[in-house]
Length: 111
Length: 111
Image 1 (cartoon, chains in turn green, purple):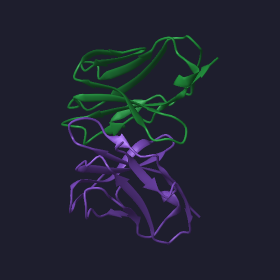
Image 2 (tube, chains in turn red, blue):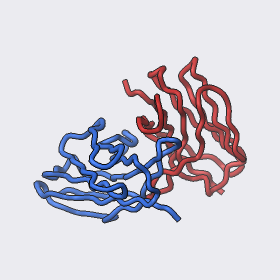
Image 3 (cartoon, chains in turn brown, purple):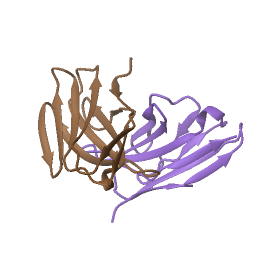
Image 4 (cartoon, rainbow over the protein chains, first blue to last red):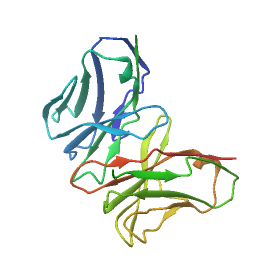
């Protein structure tokens, strides 16, 4: 069993839809949770960063962490074609030097 | 602006050849990482370094080596390239206080 599980999709939604992306994990020691966005043929870039459980909102993006269920989510409101990318979840135990990544979910937002 | 660069961006080589991928960062970060990204596996850690003269093995280190002679550079060497090492390679750096910043990637094909 992988430490971090993420449905690779692909996921296709119409413009304006609410998108929900999810990851589950097995290691209860993870404390730091991140979402990266990766455009085609580019490096991953940090989108959201949270510590421990709870919600964090940044514009159209909301990250949720439920440590009791070992489940994290990323919600995208009013999705735009420019949101089309692969979204990677990542998590670490002590700091950001021991990160474990999900396989990534490929999202397409159609105009 | 600070950045992290990788070269070459694309490389085709033959089985058995030695290959070196370059990574250079101007963030002045102590921590540097090498990952490979394959479909269905996400990002997997190859090697990492917490400072000059420090190197450590990651999850998939067999067949790879790194050396750290200065803060800015962490070259990745494939001692004897194998077809299983065909992948996209990403270098990243961090200060340890926040997230990792990724380079644009090197697409390596081993024939």
